[in-house]
Length: 223
Ligand code: AMP
Image (cartoon, rainbow, N blue to C red):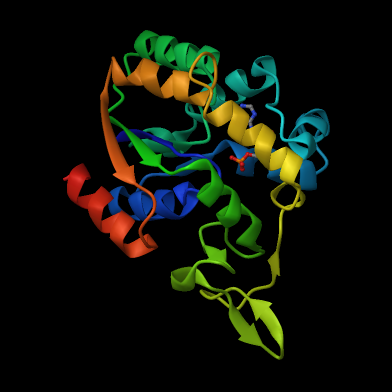
């Protein structure tokens, strides 16, 4: 099963992605995670990407497109993949579509989590990352995934691991920039979604209800 998942930052895309990943047993490939791993590992790619990420700008397509197309060629992708955070603009959407056609790979679905800009922004600012596992969702503003408390400190609700906040999640101008890109219907992510709407089945879910309601809706539509 090959799936794309779209949704503005803060829409619960990562959380729902983790659920879809479990259902189909496919790797959850998150562009942002790959960049952050490269930054913390001090790689050349990480050094190139960091400045853009800190400002909430897209890492240039010349870096991102080959990185993702190579990742999809790895062995663990042979049985399918869930791609999250890519494509983020029309150019990337076209590049992905062309590359898949060339390799004779079918895209089964695209998922779109629909959420308004202000709600997405509030949710981003509450998001916390678990040091042990990126698929352990925690958010101080969402009841269903509120972190646990241990010795007066907030810890991961799944494994008790330490939590941190991403710098770009606490910076309002970086959030606004990311959302400007997402909601852009001319060349941004929404333009990319519309491009796929003409080519594959796009499953839309409302991101406003709680995590469980959204995942129930999503899983029932995925069949
Ligand atoms: P995310 O974890 O999805 O919020 O991504 C964090 C940051 O990584 C984004 O704000 C961009 O700077 C960069 N990034 C993630 N995905 C892409 C992409 N498809 N193209 C370019 N930059 C990206």
